[in-house]
Length: 211
Image 1 (cartoon, rainbow, N blue to C red):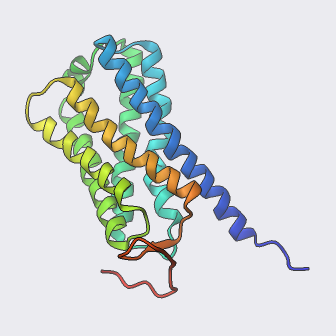
Image 2 (cartoon, one colour):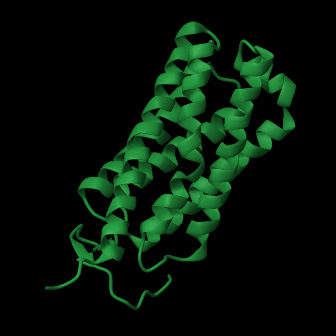
């Protein structure tokens, strides 16, 4: 009798955990962003929901990167770590807003200012580095990657020009939709596979050539 493959079972369990987090956390974050826009500010319920959404987001890209075998180039890892560092800080700012009873994003930004902006830039740079690595290695569906990247670009551009908050919410929504679709592909489409130029899935070879 052939013994069970523990490694395969562990990777399957990890794929389900990471995929589920990619489905739930971005969706919850989008709900809290909509609540903030509708309420014209923060509320205790909205902030706590936002905090619980940010906790998985801090390690989400790193979890997705871990599932890929063989590993893609180091840009993906660097991007995942930068993105995770940004969301670790954003989770902290949510607790800060709760403890200080800060009512709006503008007030929060006025208290944190430069440091908040730096971590926003880390989020954009890290996310785009990860997306570029995944795109070139072709181990995730490209439509979710494109959607995720577009949301990051919209967030960055709207940070440079004055615009209504609803547009920033739309940028975050695009980014979250991309992550949700990636989560769906992890659970139902498998990982450790490479997409050919015609969109067919083929098994990764042992020898991975970095491009």
